Length: 398
Length: 58
Image 1 (cartoon, helix red, strand yellow):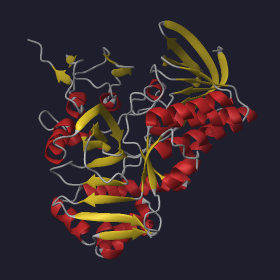
Image 2: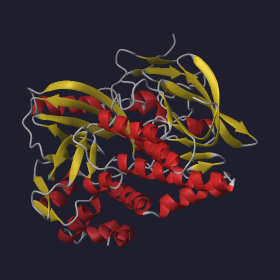
Image 3: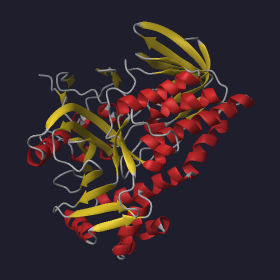
Image 4: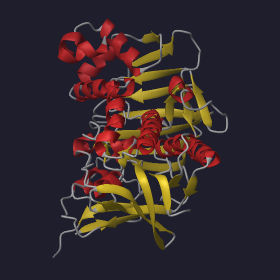
């Protein structure tokens, strides 16, 4: 590890790894620091990712694909099942990853390209000169040092602190944190090629419960509930344990995972002088699905591209870096975040009876492309009066 | 004061993200509570496992 790089990346998840790899490919010197002793562990994720989303960044490799999905089911509060399939029956629509191996692969690719990587190494404070972030104080296995950098990319995840130390308020509102728990449950009867989503106030208030297959007779079984609904005796773990006891009484937990997923609006501004914030740290998780892998990789790549341009021109000011903020906000991803935020806000206000009504309207949907947008479009098509209830939002869904 | 039940904590960082004071920090598997904690209890409410407790001093 040197004491000066063009770019310092904080966090070794998908956002940080893609940022580091892209920055190196753009000719920059890069150091990536990960505070945990192992890349990819502990997992904080249900591990689902759409086919197209993955292919945009990396070709699938059986090493880190746990299972291939051909469809999904949504289960209404009253138990009614809506089946979602691709128009091409049986064709692959998405993957359940093995994040421990996947994250490691992405960081390895960054390292292979030429990035320096340090684990059990954390950024504990920014170096700020005249209001400009110019690197970080680094603590590694008890040793304290400083790394100077023209640009710092903060990809430090949901528990992000770096941007906060730089004066940016990253607090997630209580009602917009999904308080989550998951078991990797073995020896259970599941359809190993279909994800299942359970909705309802009894099962997951303002969130959902998921069964994401990890292969034959094994799945990520987890639940996320709104922080607002969480409390002693009714925490995410209470909801999950109740479900597992009833649905998979003989399942054997082989991993126990907790987590927080932000479903708030993104940060008001995701850059500062010398700083770019990417991935979960920028609060760019999809507020409807809670999915953050693609958005992390997308913002990580963009952060590095803009960093390279700005370093080239010698201007790393907030004004120059705003290109990053502006680009993602006007991208397909940025627009989906706005749209899905509104849909989430609509859905969490609906009583179970209304959710039942919506899901009952159709027992099987064949989607042309397997995305949340086409699902929503289809649901509106069979429930035309939803158009009125959604009001101004409806226009963005056409 | 805020009590961390380390035997229950899943060191997931959910609490860190909601702390309005930025008083919590997750260092690997160890949750640190800094002096700026106002014992507001938000973290204890959202913890998915129930690892945080607002302990009233006697």
